[in-house]
Image (cartoon, rainbow, N blue to C red; front, side):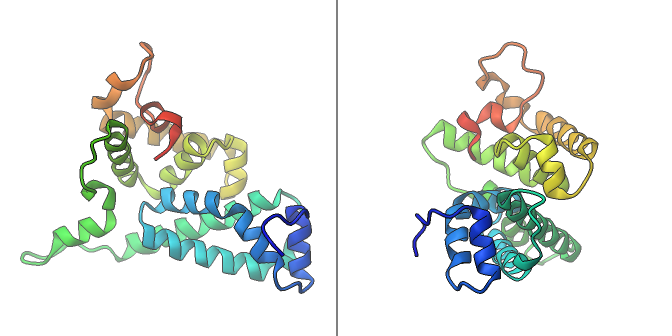
Length: 212
């Protein structure tokens, strides 16, 4: 069985729940790239993203029989990935401590904000992407997840509310607060926008195509 399997996502998930050994693998490969992008942009850390994605797929693998088709399979998978990322970020936040004098505090900062330490690239777009990624890393995890899904992945507010299991107003509020903070942190990049009436810098404003 290959990634070109003609069955729908729902059919593959049902086949997996019925015991077909390869069905879930086909489903995962079909959506792997986008799930990975969401995990990476939400955690801003490749190791955390990989761990969160693995945890999420294990959860989805085990929970397949409980899927009731109330949302698309992709929505269900994304919800599990986002929840795994947010849970991981919360655990990481809880374990962060202020380093004592003489401790390697810089190493801890490097570990949790890798984008700020990437080598300079000759491409202006690449440099800008790194600046935006670093700014996103400074946002609270709930705001970051909402912005990643709405502004970078292109989901609607309603879809993200469903993904994260909160009210639409909550997502709007998180996005609004996150954009306001980014506008302050990325104010020096406003001259990259061609629009004269841009009210504040957003991730999609400074990265062509919204890519990070």
